Length: 99
Image: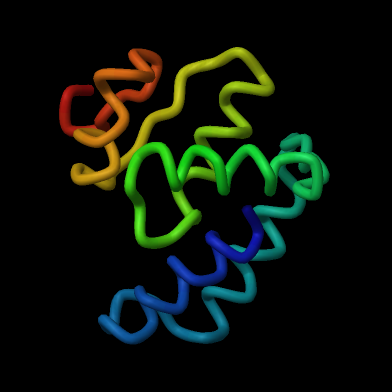
């Protein structure tokens, strides 16, 4: 998750919405949030299985679905193609556009 946050911030720097300095402050704030970071090693095999099952080129979003499964919670995504691929078999996958 921290790498996803950093990547999203980097994109906003490229788009001119953030500066490097403001991004570093945001990353510091991110680490100050009460978020439990979980080890990803146990999720990799499940993520690969999900990516294959859902015919995904990459296993990126499948990692988040695997994590949601392990926590028994919904997975909200902004990736509409992933949502479409998963919605039939995984009804707890939600598309953020429906929020």
